[in-house]
Image 1 (cartoon, rainbow, N blue to C red):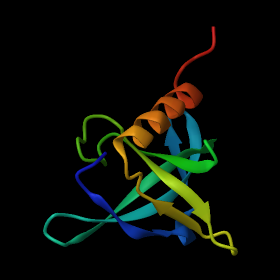
Image 2 (cartoon, rainbow, N blue to C red):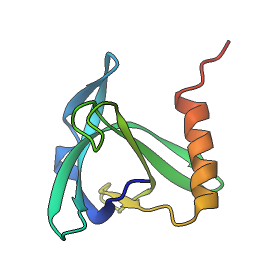
Image 3 (cartoon, helix red, strand yellow):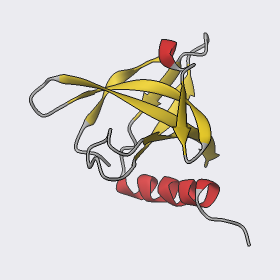
Image 4 (tube, helix red, strand yellow):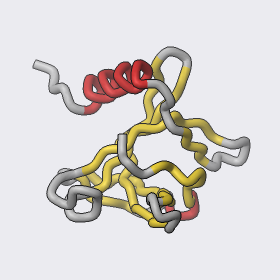
Amino acid sequence: MSEKDLQGHVHDENCNHDHDHEGVELETIILTFEDENGEEEEVECGVIGVFDLEEESYIALVVPEGEGEGDLEETFYIYKYSEEEDGTPILDVIESEEEFDKVNEEFEKQFFIEEE
């Protein structure tokens, strides 16, 4: 995962914007990160999708080329996902390496491996 940590909230009022990802319009959300100096940075991410694995839900996000950490290629984030009663999204970090590996494998299967 990123060196940045999720600050703890998603600006859901921005979820209705669209973002172009390889010719597909994606809804976007704004994540607020805190860097190592304690300064906040907002990053607009396209929502690739929400998926379930082993009784948990996860959300896959993409930061387009030129806007992420590396700036040369897309940056992907995967978080645990749930919603408050009013539909406000709640994202949480994936704590263990083992869980992240399983989730990343499922993410790749669902969104990147083409069927023959």
